Each structure stands twice: as structure tokens, then as C-alpha cells.
Length: 281
Image 1 (tube, rainbow, N blue to C red):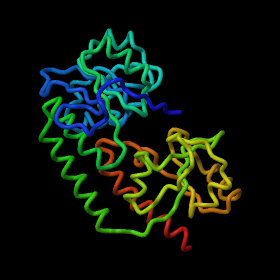
Image 2: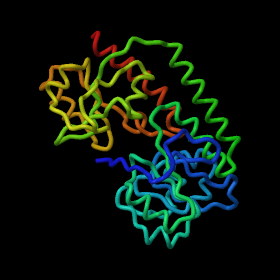
Image 3: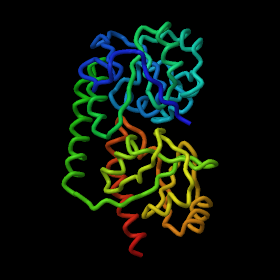
């Protein structure tokens, strides 16, 4: 499962201008950057910002947009990064994330890459800082501003709805069952749509759970399509075992920050409407 790494740098802070989450400042408007992204959602964001031409590497999980990334070299997965391959591609910047990549990867990259850019969005609103950071780093301010406006409009619409919260249990893994804590990006996305992830007495952000007592505390169970791809058989079995409504959920819409957050906010309200319809018959 995802491993949270702590970067040995300045105290965590919201990125401003060209300062990343770890407090490390990087040059703005870098001329002819060579970028490797080890974060699928941020690879998509780079493309949305018009920076695809500067991508020289990606993980095998960086799949959107497919037609753009088809010819971009792969450097392994998010956890099993091939450092030697990265060195051969000679990037100026590597994009990493606290949840997606390991601390060991980040430290190894610091010795071979000029700029390791650390990200760690915990709320949907944190995407505004991501857009600004990438816009400053790579001279894409205009497109970053367009994304920021679109996201701000969606967030304002969420506030205006002020929907009553429904307690839900969001599952991301099976054997053992695993969920998300309230301090995760997914939990905040749920809140934006009028749903609240039930809490757990655990220090883990992705705790293992006993499914029946956990489900008893929720109005419904949401089964994500990633990292474990739950399907209709899981949906039927859990509905029978827990006597709770069970919905299949697009995990990319719920957990991919970056430009996907904009459509994610639209999606989560459709999901809430589906949940209400299911609950009320």
C-alpha cells in the first residue's frame, strides 16, 4: 500500500511561487525543462498545462492522456522506480508525491537530479497551490490560472449546496479490507460532495479494518476502482454480508488531484445523488 515518506527538508508549508511542499525553492521559468513525473495525476496535470512536450519520463501508471503519453518512456512504477533509467534520461526535474512515492526514492533522486519537486495535497483546495507551483516552475501561468478559476468555481458551488452529510465507508483494498482516514485527499473530496468518511482510531492514513463493525457505522459502502479494482461480484457480496447499500466508485475521479479535480467535483455530486436515490429507493 502507499507509504508516506517524510522529506528531510524545511517544515511542511503550502507551496507558494516556486517553493514545493518540502519547503525547497526551485528556479522559476526554467528554460527547456526535462521533466519526469512519478505521479499519475500530476503527469495528467502537466499535460493539461501544455507541458507534455517537456515530459521525458513517466511511470507505467501514468496513462492519461493516453494519446499524448504513448511515446513517453517508462521508468518503472510509483514504488519501484528505476533510478539508473532516470539518470540516462537526464531530467532537470522529477515530480514526486508523499503518498505515491517512497522516502527512499526521493532521497536517491536528490543525488542524481537537479530538482526533485515534492507534492502533498491533502484537500481539493490544495490543487490551487499545485497549479500555481507548476505554472511558476515551468512558465505556464496562464493555463494554471485557467485551471484555478475553473476549480474555484466548482468549490464555490460546493459551498453553495451545503448538503447534509452522509456517513460512508470508502474501501480501497481487499484481503485485508483497507479504507482511508479523514486527513486524506479522498476524504476531503467526499466532503465536497456531501459525504463524510467515518473515522477510525488509527495512526495510519490507510488503515486495515474489520468490515462488519465498520460498515455498521456507515450509511453506505463505496468501492473504489483503484488501487484495488472492486467489481460487481464484490458489490453483491458486501451488500449481502453487511446489509448496506454498496456503490462502485471511479477511483480516479475521487483520488486524482491536479486537473482531474475539476471533473472530480462534478463527479462526486453525481455520486451523492446516486447514493440518495439508492437510500430512498
